[in-house]
Image (cartoon, rainbow, N blue to C red):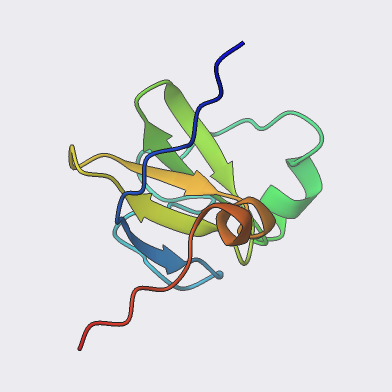
Length: 94
């Protein structure tokens, strides 16, 4: 069976924490944010500890420390910090 390697690509990303990246990640009570949230995010949502953002598949919850990635097509989506660290490394431009 042939083996495949993930193609390297460069993305723009920023870590999210409550009160940060306000134009992309919504919190409870903001226009466009969901009114009702199911478990397991219900309590964290009510206390403002998680965010929500629209994505191509509808919406996604964002937890503190998650990365918000801007892909080559201009779409934004969240990635858990541990997965981001496994998939990407910082590009140092000279």
